[in-house]
Length: 150
Image 1 (cartoon, rainbow, N blue to C red):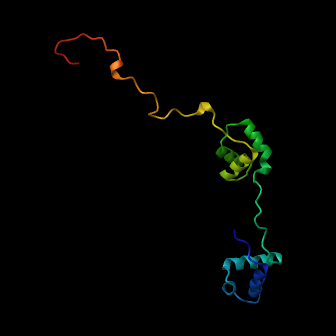
Image 2 (cartoon, rainbow, N blue to C red):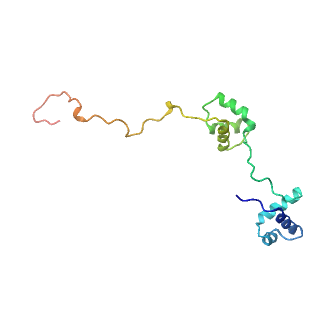
Image 3 (cartoon, rainbow, N blue to C red):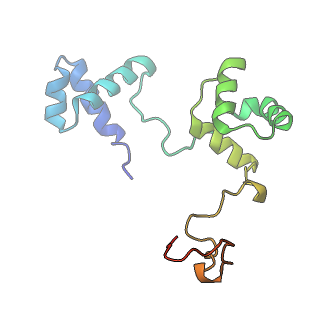
């Protein structure tokens, strides 16, 4: 995994920009991207230092504040789909989240949706027992007419 460049390098690049060099010149002189020079300069103007932000920390679940509402909603309608739940969050709670965010929250809460045995689909074609042979079927009752082939 990539790690942030050193604060010493960041400080030298920003100092060069402060002294009057363009961002492109500073980027070329220190072999860094222009976008990095822009971000470091903006951070230095906003906070007074060029230290990188915290690295590698995982964000918490977005739907944690909505936990009580979600649990109540699922108790009222246990067969609600993930997509429907996402749509209700947006319309009723004004919370815009992706499908994956709802799915991750449900997984973290231990709420899974398993298919019931009664919901299984029909047997696959070609897997049913074979039909009886024609010879074993009873012959139809009909009068025999000489010379007639039916």
